[in-house]
Length: 366
Image (cartoon, rainbow, N blue to C red; front, side, top):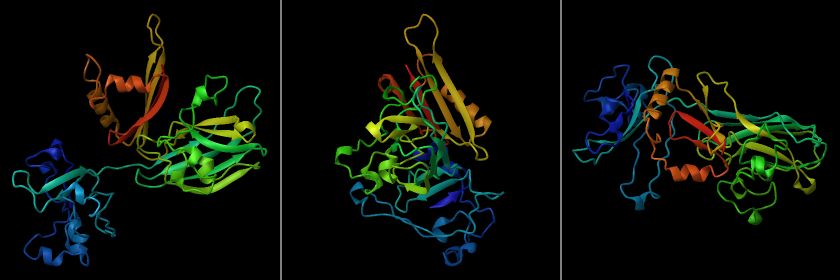
């Protein structure tokens, strides 16, 4: 496995000449590859290796040839590479990572798989601007912060709430965002129920604060990290949650947090989980499809919010690619009409991470 000069093209899944678009091994410093190369290039002498030679500087990896052996073969490699820059003129961003096959068929070549090395910004989100209905007295204020480096990392967060007056009980992530035009924004018909994408049976779960993260609903913050009972000011400096993703289809970004009163589990106040856009190069793009014209049978809207690290030119290119068809529905990923209608029977929110460099939050009401 090694880094090559270019990102892979469409030949990454070819049956012949696979991944040849990645070019040669990345070697910006011109390290000689003569007869003595393999003798001198090793983990104890990494500066004698080409910058992209991860095998020489680290170790080989084993990949199962049969599904039945998948559980028997695992690769875990950790080493510090002083010659694999992510910034500067010789950075590996925009290059390709190639896995080679020692037993490859000649027609395919020895390149088993390849992928591009791209910048990924951590996702950060926060909750603030709490809303309640009329005649519902609430002085709740404060923020909840979430951050996740990547889809493979744990989510970290902190909670700072005040004005609870000893009345609060639990607090949870709910399925939908908080509407700004509803008289009672925290009700079930506004934000729906607890976010529970893995269908955890709460009746079989442990008491709050005693179980592991996976034993509670993904959105059950008080179950996983403790109730608000008897608190006026509540501070949790930091928490770690392995079951509260900010990436991927089960992201909580764009959903809401509801604080319940202890009495009758009443929905007291709520706020939307908003993404933070403070990283350099991160842009926020919003698209809106409005169905409010007179004379049509459908009324409502679909709102798309995308945060990514693409340049403006790249975003324009993606837009052109997705809107090229003028007849019928554009569907580069073969999304069926039935799937869309099922998701939008009333109100839904989901994330779409199939574009490798962006994550879209889609919500709406029809």
